[in-house]
Length: 310
Image (cartoon, rainbow, N blue to C red; front, top):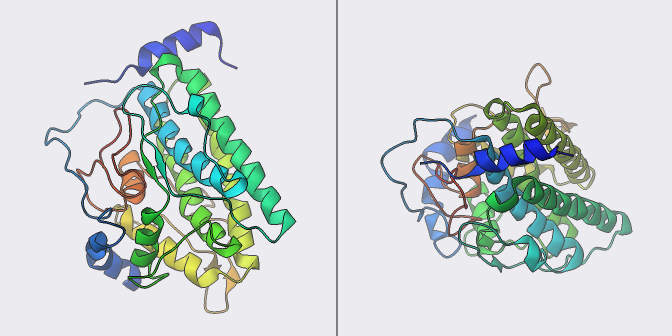
């Protein structure tokens, strides 16, 4: 737990400051996805032309993480319990938004339901922890789309065809695929944010959340493999890698080689998790590659806080 002096310092700092398929997706497929999901993809508003020259404050980095935790918490809360976050956990600075879509998953497996509930509880705890740490500087929950955004992402990845609907709350299989879209992103986001945090207490807290997100990712990847969902999972991985705009391979599916050998840990040749910058993460959650994007996809009105433009 943070000491009082560290909390005061955090609040002061937190005030907002002034592969062939993958290449194809990068060059063509994802750029044409704007027709999907009621215009959520490809309609993002451009950010101001002047780029920030200074590194974001540590509080801004934590608020960026809080925006992502809101999304994960809402997804898992609806999947496990049929409702979203309590109203008291959605307030803060910036424009508060509602949640579109989401309902309880009709779990057939008791174990699968328990997995969903445990992850939901973890994500709720992350939201509470970050909000408490940020105090009055915590951003409110932005508008979140858990409906059209998934369809847009699934069409862009080739999991479904245009005109079809992808509802991650409709079955256990679709729930796992929806969860996969988030989990690896969370790991790479926290890993990529590490160089932006210098205060030991903040860095330790972020590392602790990263570890839990990695546990979640391992659970989801294992369940996808065990349930024979390698093909659509790998398509999502390809699309996610194309979306981030980095040009580098920062994503891995759950199988390797033609024999379908399991690849349950996404890591580089040194067995180190991949890193994504906040801008690369924003490209994924906005479902729009490129720079200067400030809304779209899962966040139809954008994120709250300083870090909101790809």
